[in-house]
Length: 261
Ligand SMILES: N[C@@H](CCC[C@H](N)C(=O)O)C(=O)O
Image (cartoon, rainbow, N blue to C red; front, side):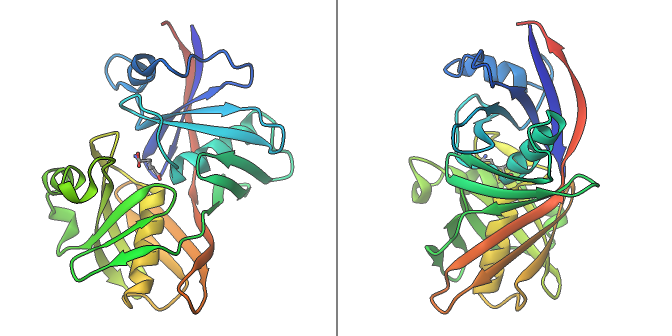
């Protein structure tokens, strides 16, 4: 039997497990995929282990819904901060944790809005059709018309599986401008192999790409996703290095329970 907590951040949902005792069999991909399965398991876009770390408040270990351990998850990181608060690991609304892409600082306010510092970003491929950058996870960013009606699944899958991004693949974000420094996005996620309701590293990648390509002129950018609203704020220097990048939005406990395995 495994005790789990289910969290969501703007509709990107995760199975959370307190693995401070180290009981969870991390190599068991089938178990992770089962726990994330929406019919046979708990259901989630990913599964996150909260672990002890000697130098940080805690460690984040992230798996996609297909069971594979993957790169950084921005919404997952925000939900993990809320989970750490629920477990009493965070007492003063601030924390520092370690994830696969390095150190992260975060703050949590009384409404459970979590602001998470993402990695610095400098290497960005910009061309006429798209941008590609790594915000902790790899992201293809492409402007489209009428994103609400766009065929995200088929177009996203094609780009994700294209030669351009082989062998690792990429996440794919389709973007439409809603107003000044305000964008709507829909994301096809690698490892879920489907559209999700939100992607935090994707929102971050879109905000940076829109600023770099002149579609935005403020360093605070509003991003609407299918599951809610996110904000991305950053600093940028004369070499187009993006630092102090913060992803902010809600992170909420949905339910908790135990599951037989
Ligand atoms: N939903 C995530 C991104 C998770 C990682 C991604 N699926 C990958 O494998 O690259 C987010 O909120 O950032």
